[in-house]
Length: 80
Image (cartoon, rainbow, N blue to C red; front, side, top):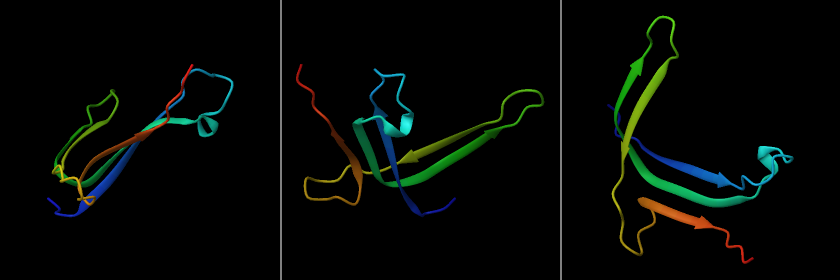
């Protein structure tokens, strides 16, 4: 087990247009998870099936002025 901390980003892009490549689509929402710690990992490598890995992470939720740990969200707002 490693005590190293990680950051991860999850980006949700606009699904409405199939004509545009994924890299050109606008990001609608971003989730940034900061200070993640890898708690456990497991692998499955059965013969004849897909290989899988499960990674379990945790982080603490910081206070309003603490930006090194926690879950942060940003995004776009569209008015119709």
